[in-house]
Amino acid sequence: MLNPIHLRTLTEAVRTGSFAETARLLGYTTSAVSQQIAMLERAVGAQLFERSARSVRPTAIAERMALLSRDALAALSELEREVRALTRGDAGTLRLASFATANARIMASTLAAIVERRPGADVLLDEGEPDEVLAGVLDGDRDAAVVFAYDLDPRTWPRELIATPLLSEPLVLVTSPGHRLASRADASLVEVADERWICTRSDTAGSKSLERLCATAGFVPRITLRSNDYGVVCSLVRRGLGVAVVPKLALGIDAGLGVLRIADGDVFRRILALHRPSNTNPLLPIVLDALRAQCQAIAHRWG
Image (cartoon, rainbow, N blue to C red; front, side):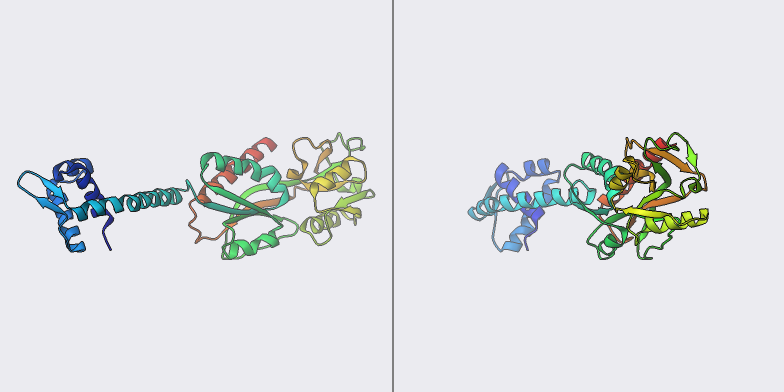
């Protein structure tokens, strides 16, 4: 196989008609240029320059090789540029997954920051609950996933993955704006024990957490409405159809609700990022940094 370095030297020597000028332009010595041309001549089995004491003249073979080499060398240069961009994270693809609330409150700003820092990169995002996205991270279809776990419904993550804590999200009691407790800063769940409750599906961590939280307070909640969309849950609460316990991110910027700290004790939903330790995607550290920064900003706003 022909050495591309020698071909680049050849094309420059053909263009300039001088080994000395070629050496000056490429940063070599004249002797090094002469040696490269000699090695190329041995590789192709033909003389490429007519040499005299004061000048060199390319042969017809050299002129044809230089012409044919230009496109190949340009393609090689483009390949080198693209590889450098990929290894720096200036290009390439980042494949992520997250759950709905995080997509709305965390991922949107995070992805905007990544695109601003790496406009040449492609960022792909899927949505799903933790159990729905874990397999994609484990088998390499996703670079990372943002997941959650409730304190009152603890779980472990596969040992093959690295878990990066991002945010401790308090659970809060929410009521309609006109509710008798709406103006309070906090309340015990016993104070709303007899009310209608709105919750996620019975097989979810949110529902299990509510049941265990209420059991600790000494009652079983009367759940009348269910939705796995916390936006829907908050909308139903806002219209006075019941009360709910939701993670704080579910409130959005302007919830229009009574929001109360649970006086029975602080409980949290923990948000974290999962990725494989063997993942070498140069965009992965960038997204982890952006996620941490965004979650720190949210925690700071919460005080």
